[in-house]
Structure formats: C-alpha cells, structure tokens
Amino acid sequence: MERISTIEALEAIYGMPLERAKWKEIDFINEDYRRFIEASPFLILATVGEKGVDCSPRGDPAGFARIVDEKTLQVPDRRGNNRLDSLRNIIGNPQVGLIFLIPNVGETIRVSGRAELLVDEELCASFSMNGKPANCVVSVAVEKVYYQCQKALARSKLWDPEFYADRDSLPTAGEMNRTFASMHGQAFDGETYDREYPEYMKRTMY
Image (cartoon, rainbow, N blue to C red; front, side, top):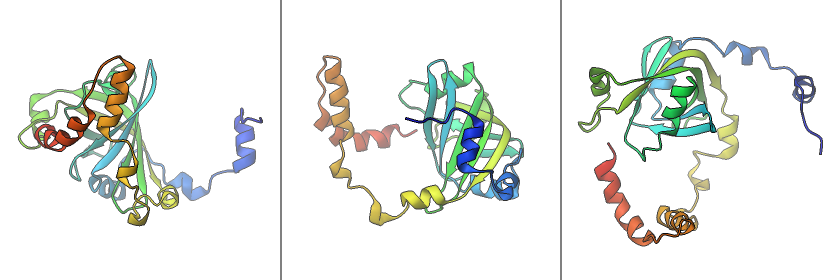
C-alpha cells in the first residue's frame, strides 16, 4: 500500500492552498471571529500529553467562552468524572487547539494557542452557573484563529434532522458501563443507571 511520507508527495496530490484560505488565518480574534465565538455554546478542546492526544467536549450557554481581549480567551472547566485528561495535558504541554461549533451553522472557528489553568476565586466565580463557580478557568493565549468553511458539516448533514440517528438503535450509557464493568469482573445495573441518570444529571450538571 502506498503511503504519503513527505510534504512534497502530499502537495503533489492536493496542490497548493487558495490565497483566501491563507488570508483567513490570523493571530488574533477580530470582530468577525469574536461574533462567531460568542455565539457558540459548544467547543472541542484538543490537548497533547505524555499519553498522546486528547479531544474533550466543552459546553455551556452561548458566550461561555469569554474573550478577554483579541489575544486571550477563557473557558470555564466544570465538574465531570475527574479523569482530568485535558487539564493534566495542559500542565505538561500548554499547546491547545479548539474548534467552536454553533447549532445550524455550517462554518466553524479554529483557535490554536497556549493555555494555562487559573483558579483565582473571583475569576472562577465570574463563570458561575446555577450558583456554582468554575472549578478552574482554561485561559488561552491566542496564536492562530481560522475560519473553516462548511464543507465538512454539509457533507455530514450534522444539523439536518432528517439524518439524525435513532438513539434507540445505539447502546445506552448504562449498557456501555455494564460492558466495561464486566471487563473488570464487576456487576453493574445498567437499566437502573439509565432510568435514574436524567434526574442525576439535573442535580449534578454544575
């Protein structure tokens, strides 16, 4: 099987980028990019650590990613499963990437930069939801911002209800937890977990 192993071979297949594709990458958050980021209720955070690459979802009401200035944005970190994969990676390697998505919008915004974890009490409190402050704040020093066209989301039909998956055709969280528990020789009541989880999530969202 042939493989691409050099930049020259890669460019021979794909050619060179369009000029306007280069123009869209800037090293700060301009007004257009700010409007997109502040309208986003969801992002994917990519980090790199000793155990490899990690991608983690982050979400809150639109505007949860705070633009401090054109070179700085901040994202609150909420309670979760305490694996802390992304946060551990940031401590070891501050390079991060973020992709911001907006429901029913095809374009996305990519941000790259260097992150640090802030635990200032007043800052965390300023990100409070339902009376609960952020556990910490991921503060990103912006190095690159890029506006991604809508081809990927259009091809995937991500926002088209006609193509939404039938949730009943997929394993439930309880079923998956039961599988993993059995791999460790433990019993797990998946049906009870699935039945009680919606109420549990309401209590523990923040």
